[in-house]
Each structure stands twice: as C-alpha cells, then as structure tokens.
Amino acid sequence: MYLGESHRRTARHTLTDLSPTADDLYITDVPGKGKGIIALRYFQRGETVLAEPPLFTQGLVRSAASVRAALAQCPPEAQHAFWELHNCHPARGSALGTFETNVLPCGANDAHGRVAPRGGVFATAARLNHGCAPNVNNAWDAARGVLVLRALRDIAAGEELTLGYGALLARREDRRAELRAKFGFECACEVCVLEGKARAASDARRECLAALYGAHLQGAYGDPFDGVGEAALALRLLREEGLPVYESSFCYSGFHCCAAVSDYVSAKAWAVKAFEASRAAFGEEHASYWKGLVANPNSYADAGSLGRRTLAGPDSPLWSVLGF
Ligand SMILES: C[S@@+](CC[C@H](N)C(=O)[O-])C[C@H]1O[C@@H](n2cnc3c(N)ncnc32)[C@H](O)[C@@H]1O
Image 1 (cartoon, rainbow, N blue to C red):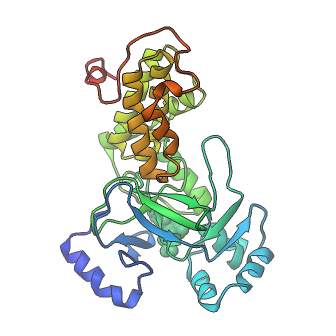
Image 2: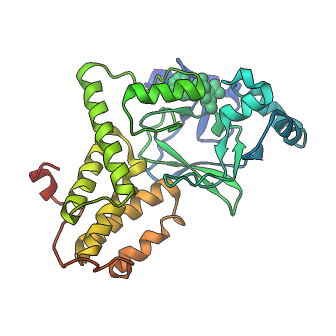
Image 3: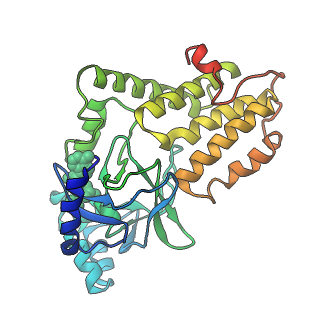
C-alpha cells in the first residue's frame, strides 16, 4: 500500500495522538486490517527498520497460566502494551490468545524444520500486518536480545510495512486458507486483491516457485546446467512476484552447480548475489558464510566434484535467450 501525499499529511496529523515507538515508523489504522505500521521515511534495501526487545518471551510449551505468570513480572507499561494488542484467538482466552496472535520467533525458524526455542511479543512489531509480497523480514539478534526488522527491498515513505506470516509460495486460495485457519482473516494484501489474468499469472508463478523450491531444497537439480537455469528462472519469478526473501536459497543452488563443475567465475557471481540477498534479509553476520565463498568459491566442500564445464552467473543474458 502506498499512501499519497494527502494521506500522509492526515496520518502525520494523527501521529501526535498515537505516540510512535520508533522515530521513523508510526502505527495507525489501515483499512481492512486493523492497525498497521507505516514507514515515515524511505528505507534502503537491507536497512534496519526496527530493533526491538520483547515485552516477554515464552518457550514452545506454553499456557494461559505461563503467559500470565510472565506478564506479571513485566513493568506496568509493558503489561498495558500487551493488553492493547489484537487477539484473533478469543477461544484460547485473552492471555494465550493475544500471545499466540502476536508471537514472533526469538531464534531461527527455517525451511529445514528448525524451530526457534522461544517466542516473544513485541509492542511495535506486533502491529505488522501480513503481506504476500512482504517488504520486511524478521531475524532474532541473540547477542543483543532484540528482534531486528530489515527492509527486503527499498521502501518508500508512506508505505505499510508487511511481514510474511505463512507459506508464500502457494496459490492465492491456499495462502488465504492458511491465513484464515491460523489467524482468522481474509488477506487483503495487494497480491490477494489481483483479479482475472493478473491473478492467474501470479498463481502460476508461485506454483512454479514452490515446485522449484521443494526440488532445490533437496538438491534435486538433475544436470548442473538445468540446476543453474532453474535458479535463474526462480530469481526472475521472485522479482515478478516481489519475493526477495527466497533469493539467497536459489542463489545457493546456482552457486553449488557452478562450483561443482569448477566454473568459479560464475560461482562467484552467484555467491555475490547470495551475499547481498542474505545480508538484506538476515544481516551482515548471517551473510558472512557467503563472504568467504565470494573470496574463494573453490573452498566450497563440493567444489570440483563433477566434470569441468562452463555455466553462467545469475545475470547472464543467456537465461532469457534460453527461456529460463
Ligand atoms: C499480529 S496482528 C497484526 C496487527 C493488527 N492488525 C492489529 O490491529 O494489532 C494480526 C492480525 O492483523 C490482521 N491482519 C494482518 N494482516 C492482514 C491482512 N493482510 N489482511 C487483513 N487483515 C490482516 C488480522 O486481524 C490478524 O489476525
């Protein structure tokens, strides 16, 4: 959502009443979504948008009693902030329902089934609405004990910040069904409101991405040339769908295939792209793995494991010529 100049002025007018918790963001009503967070300035891709400590955290096994006990240890203003939050699970009671509506991982949740050992509730980040083409990503900074939100792409002043709550590589009906079941809402994001041919094209791209993601996660590339071509195709589809959060995973496939056939020029180009995507989504520290491979792609464990061939980097014109 991009708010025009007049909306921004109106929104700024309400700012004084809403006491923003960060100078560059503010929380306000967003049509059809309850409250949401609006960027008050331009954020560059990879920039930290918010770093916030939790009000309190809980382990994976939690109950209304454990939430209430943790809350009782919090200062009164934190308790007040918690009770102000949305509860989309009223059947689970006010304490547990509010916690489960707003919890974000304090650790890594990933595609390999790793689940963060704790979850926390954050006064500002809890106001992030879901988007099927999210513009921020969340990562837990264990050293500082804060949740960090980073811009996945450039964000304009006046844009709403959105996070992916569920599986994004799925058709609209499947995404909506998951969000309805888990959070009780009909997604009103800019991808879900597409109709006709635009919606069919989006569904087809996401279905193709889901198939590629599943195969590449298992290293099922087939021939290395096909693996690199599929990775290039995936990057194009991700660009068209506004899904940069998956870029580094596909860059890994491109890198792996090129390094395996000793094409270190192309491997390096994939590693550079993976580094940039990983840093934007997860931060410099997380991306350090790629820094080493940019400098020395031949230090990769599977480097040179297949016969020598020349493939191509992610931005090679070859891929569009060949229809990838
Ligand atoms: C974690 S809260 C987000 C902040 C919330 N809007 C509020 O007012 O505090 C999750 C709830 O926000 C609403 N929501 C989030 N994303 C939405 C979307 N894309 N479309 C419609 N409602 C959404 C739903 O009511 C959902 O249960």
